[in-house]
Length: 269
Image (cartoon, rainbow, N blue to C red; front, side, top):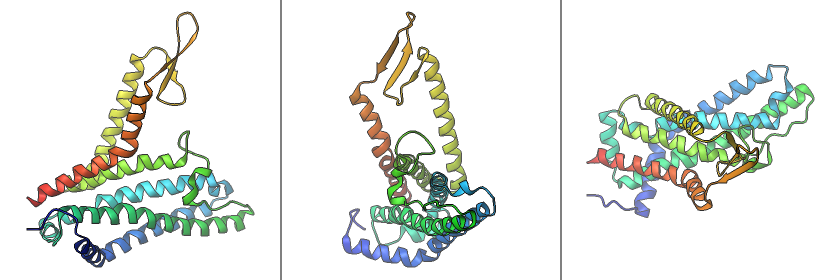
């Protein structure tokens, strides 16, 4: 019986074993990301619009690639549990379930975002250099380590806020890959779609309940016009607003990981 704690020596052995057994899978994953970027940016190079390689557009390319590749790779993060022979081999690995789960998170979340960012930076730099030569422009290849200095093409605020959306979505794909035994990737996409529809419905329903007005730059304050014609500002209590913000930015993703870990332990029982 393996104790359900983290052992340094055992964790290192698990990392080595995981690297050896899954090297080909991860190599093919990063090769697929590279091929996708080469094909996508290559097609854009064939167009005559030099603005397709502006810093603003490069930011869009980066996050589209990250979301697509990150979520799809997470769909197969626990592929060992997809059928019985692989599940037995995975569950009998001489390590605690916590060590196996953290090992998968390290390779599927931490290492993936580092490696995919490195791949994107390399391919994008080459593509921007070719575009500058072809169109006689002077675009600068974006640096993924200093994203906040570039314009946000998605919403108001720093670009790094996009990661507060990326990690929970990726965690949902991880949870679905653990929970569902078949077609986990497609079911995760369906779950994301249903959550988005529910969010839109709740948002629209909430707006109908509120008096005529609009939110003032953020969700903490709501501006409305009273019958006298004066503008009034309704503000949410600061503590409540901060609590909600902290939950969605820093606690939601670990919570989804914890649920996925508990589901993994159920499969070992």
